[in-house]
Length: 104
Image (tube, rainbow, N blue to C red):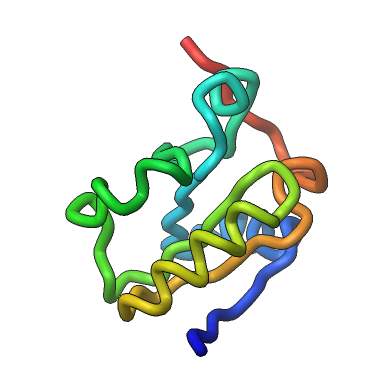
């Protein structure tokens, strides 16, 4: 069974405020992404992860985000089973305490 870490939304925001190098992958659907997302996040919907593996660095810690934490958990299961260094953000964007960017 694959294992991965978890960080709560306020912990991720704290890391961003400290200017830690934080890579965020948002796996929500395009309409969800366009309604608001974490500044600097990369967007690959969950259903497209398999075809986009070459866009991710398996060694770089990547925080996976969705609306509530369920899809990001599934993405973490899949990616960690392939050896990717991933962190799930339980609570997702529903609990995101920071500012968001909006779709163009």
